[in-house]
Length: 430
Image 1 (cartoon, rainbow, N blue to C red):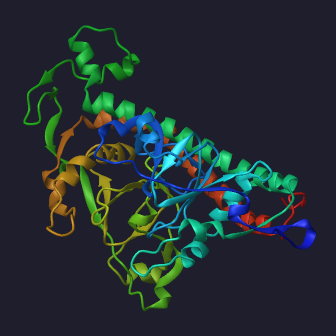
Image 2 (cartoon, rainbow, N blue to C red):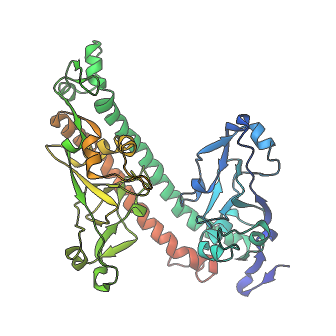
Image 3 (cartoon, rainbow, N blue to C red):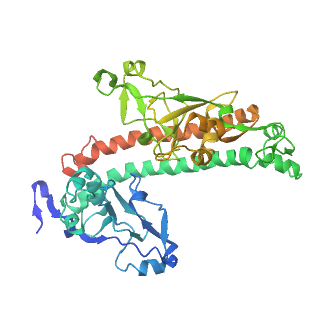
């Protein structure tokens, strides 16, 4: 039975608020089950955002029929309930199926699903602590359903969800804008420096599709090189011919005076999503004394950073000066190649860098990897023109990233106060 608390709030078990569904995976041996249009959600698809708007895998109608009872509708709240990723929450945006590592709740109409989502999303550590099993922690369907939630009356649930949801809507809008801006910049780089579109168009006698001052920068012929055909006057070489490689380091962890300062200290876990491009905040920071007494260094705005160990090839462009640890390299353009061109050039060389990693146990990018990674040395004037063209796009992306960080911090400040009743939706401070 629901228990009433102060101010008309009540406490209820999760399974009193809707139907609990544990996911299921159809047989991977049957290819007819996969490759359709129905999202198949696994823990690796969770990225910390509210809406599950893309998944790596999809099921066919046959695949859904093979796991009858496991499909969940749009608006269901999903929580990862096994392993190191346990306690992550998201909401479906379309009818979906999850694997067995995820429990979901289809919230009854007399409660607000978005309020339930925000409650659960704030309790990741608590959910992890409730898990059983020493080797692989797991929260089964029964234990998940017994999670207690404090709820205000439905109108207040909706008001709270509206406040938090409005902030997340703007964060999501910024993310979509950045994805579009990123695709625009990538399309220009692809056309100019990978497909050699302007040069090919000239060779085929096509009408110019760029302004004359840009069109005239591109050669009229392709010539043979060791990397295949390239525009006349450009060169085939290695990535190391275009960049300077910078190393990082870690201050002594036992020296408290080296930690908690004003210098952001980047590690691969601080990498942004591909569409956000810029790193502007880090989990840990160090002091100037930490910089001076270690092998790290403060890298300037616009430096490209790549992870060299572990998850090799994760990229960021620094949105403000930062230091970094020794599992990363900082990359700066040389010989007239500017910052944003360098970022996009490295980004489009990551697959080659990953293919050339060294190590028998752990794959690693070394300084020598940059010497053998193929790269086409475009005319620096064309690279500089690309820089000027994408600069407004990158500036807008960076602005959106900063705004989303501010909104995220505001949401995370309001969330625990609103869902606990410590702050009312009508409070003039909001």
